Amino acid sequence: ARKNYFYPDLPKGYQTSQFDLPIIGRGQIEIEVDGRKKTIGITRMHMEEDAGKLLHDEFEPISHVDLNRTGTPLLEIVSEPDLRSPAEAVAYLKKIHAILRYLDICDGNMQEGSFRCDANISLRPYGQEEFGTRTELKNMNSFRHVQSALEYEERRQRDLLLEGQRIVQETLLWNPDKNCTESMRGKEDAHDYRYFPCPDLVPVEISEEWIEEIRQSLPELPDQRRLRIAEEYGLPEYDAVLLTADRDLADFFEETVIGRAPAKKASNWIMTELMRELKGEPLSSCPVKAGQLAALLTMVEKNTISGKIAKTVFQAMMESGKDPETIVKEKNLVQVSDSGELLALVQEIIAANPSQVEDFRNGKTKLMGYFVGQLMQKTKGKANPGLANELFARELAG
Image (cartoon, rainbow, N blue to C red; front, side):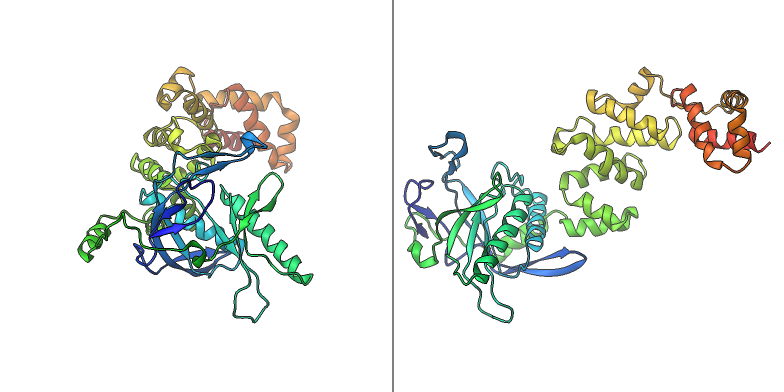
């Protein structure tokens, strides 16, 4: 069908869109907010052509139009009015985002407009079945912006209604700099678009056989993968949820474990050290491969290096892309696990700190950290911490 409206981002004055016969009819998605699960209905999914992009800030006070994406196909997902809070809306968006990423439908980049959200919001008195007058929010290019925009608009509408004023049906832009919504244009209803059949398009029949063929080719979806990873690798649900929220991250984890790294240790390192070093950049930009992380964690597991040294090695890996074995060799970071060598140093430290030894033997057991720290200084952090504690405990007991 042709959807007719006049706006600068659509030079030809109409948008080619599916109307009566969408690709997909009704569906549903399950979300979880604050430990409570809820099913959100999907009204339909249809294809239409994209419009241009208005640019305001770069050329103020003049607005420009970027028409590079105009006419390219996009998939629009229309949701049922089942969402009751900004938190539910964001959880729903994140679930759809993950599914689309898993299916390689889009890269999910909200900053570049690959994944967008237009949110309709309305308020009504408790007990009233009919929905209130809605407004539509645009220009939200992150999940955080969606949450902030909906929270602001909810407060704005509530304040107006409590003052006895009416809500104007309109389209609003979210201004992240001012943390407020701004009027863009009056909100249209379906009849305002004057839909009529598009003479340029022929009907396309989607057979059940074709649908089944596609269904059989689908990869494992986020919820299925989350359950499998938790069960197969013995991970807590928290870990499984975070790891499977992004397909690339889940792939990285499984490749690391295939490289013989312990599953829980791999999960911890990916969620802490790796995420911290990436500083919000996509995983695709990471110079460290899953096999390299597996090799690093294996070295820790075999006591070749300590966990503390491993963090230093990992930072060097992020900077250079080198294998951990190469870095450990170049920097001479192999852990000292020779009990004879460490025992001599332990006895030297005990002899040099008689007052601390006396305090320890009188019950100040927290001084063990002091003694081990002295040993780490002498070995430049390379002493095996487990063996160090064992040797100090034995020598101090005498």
